[in-house]
Image (cartoon, rainbow, N blue to C red):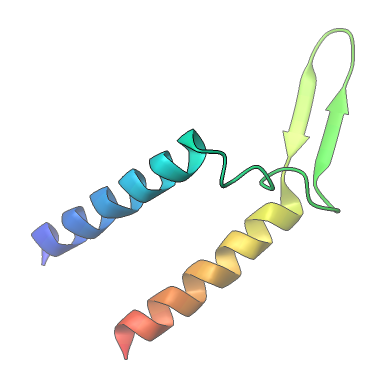
Length: 67
């Protein structure tokens, strides 16, 4: 069971890495509802909407995988 989890996790990391490399996740952090505040001294970034989208997609995928 542990080996299956490690293989799936590794595959997901590879796919996300490839998507980041080729710019397929440019939308992340730029959706309406994502909080971004920048001042002279620092940057605060809280991707609320992006994390909701990722949560919904992962929930659907895990539900399908469990069936």
